Image (tube, rainbow, N blue to C red; front, side, top):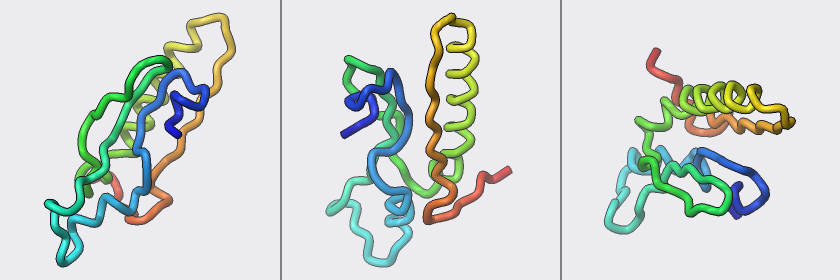
Length: 102
């Protein structure tokens, strides 16, 4: 189901929905009943690694981190002779729209 199991060489992101980042802010949220989804990174042939938990604080920084990682990927791959493909699914268009603090 995850990108590195679907032919991508590497990936960084969340495995489910951006909306889950706001769940802890909801009245009645019980962290004993629901564990926040992780932010993951992975490479082909390796197990995915948990980077952090995806909450509303991390949510506000997510697209900046995606942009930084995408730019780094382009720099690395542009130095190689082989063509490459980059797919960047930004999270900001999805609920909750939490802008970066800057």
